[in-house]
Length: 571
Ligand code: HC0
Ligand code: SF4
View 1 (tube, protein in one colour):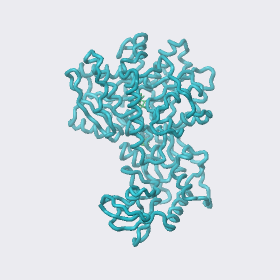
View 2 (cartoon, protein in one colour; view 1 turned 120 degrees about the horizontal axis):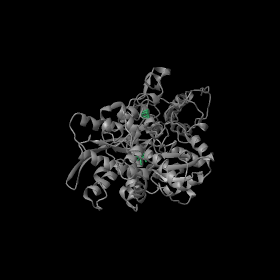
View 3 (tube, rainbow, N blue to C red; view 1 turned 90 degrees about the vertical axis):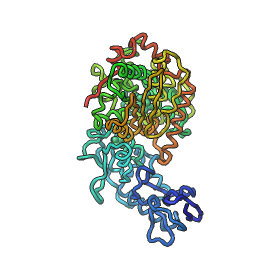
View 4 (tube, helix red, strand yellow; view 1 turned 45 degrees about the vertical axis):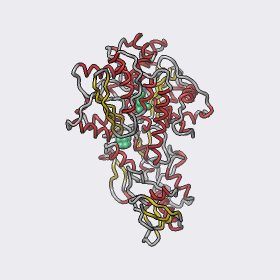
């Protein structure tokens, strides 16, 4: 331990702590802009400068180690004025159209400007006419970039994608793509993790709300919506509700008020996925098929696999993701049952994910030239639509999903958490193998937020080796052990985003990025509690799933199921 004084507060901290960490322990706030603990700690923006008595110049608190006996001042006149100067320089080079910025009021730079009372506007306004590349789901606006480098670190160190980098020098420095090509043309997997860490509005999702408004206004169309499992435990944050609040009932009411004809649930698609994927797993095990079977429901992961691990493409499950399975039956089974023209059914998805926008557009997922899903909006975009419609979200009463594609089980809901797809699959596979309705429902060995998890599950004498990775960087590590012949698994779950869908690139932005882990835990706990209290907790017990097989699909793996619910990825 070492002892120091920060703003008159005596504190002892572990040796090796930075001044920023020490200040945090002393409950003294030091502003930061580029810093992202454990991910990006370059000490480059200099907003966190502090004065240390007897030391020359000011020190960046995020990279300066605390020393025995030092006396630190975090808000002297010199410190405040220096921070103001730094902020003014950043703002001078920033497109300050805050009112029309997606990040208005969710912007760390805006908050700093307010905190430091920046009211002078003597710098020439920076031109705003950069052309935004809207071709992919992730849109970059270089006129707002503050060059903090967080996006670059997340993309290369956490996701191991390297789609973007800092290029050029001095005033020309910019974050860019290889050969300055469109992000969508290169190795970017559309995960949106860069959007989540961007302190300002330089990275955003492509706005697809107008497409949805237009569909809702079209009297010819029958517009149905599906909501992904992770949205229900995060949407409330956009309306000031506590993190992890389950707003499923309010969300359904809001969607009805927006004018959707039917409100359905992606968790129905998740249960359908388990039926197909569980069958596929047992088929591969029993018939010498390619193992390990690897989940393919996370479109960021699928694209990562295509670019970097194409030797594993045959390991990917042929199952479409729950989003796409839902879309496929919403345009076949549903219109047949409801007496509608399938060509007039417009399917909207609300997803915690930016890559789902890319998935919905994939050519190989079209059936007879028709897309499964017509428009995908994120949790953030849905919140925006609700606000634009003047709906007082917090005052809404609860409603239920519509029938036919709206009933789910706890198994479908836990898809939102890392390990959830695995656990849901184990519940069904175990019942199939034993022929019983087992009381063992929870598989705690596959839960939790460690980067990779593995377990051996014994079911009726069959030893299943399973592994789970979340964040594509962790997936890469796991696949490398298989490539090197050091591991042998039957089944692997991969989700592209760290934590799984609860932390997807389309989820609400946190102003305080240091709370990410805490927020993920709260959202995950809320998902598990939805499962615990669900009437049915296994996919094969879902009455609507039984019905769709009895009346339409025949059985899992049938030729009709293959035509509608499966696909194949080729490099
Ligand atoms: Fe997910 Fe999904 S669990 S990927 O994170 O599998 O986006 O929430 O909707 O499709 O169900 C996202 C979330 C989904 C799908 C499901 C899967
Ligand atoms: Fe990298 Fe994901 Fe952002 Fe693409 S979306 S640039 S892969 S972090």
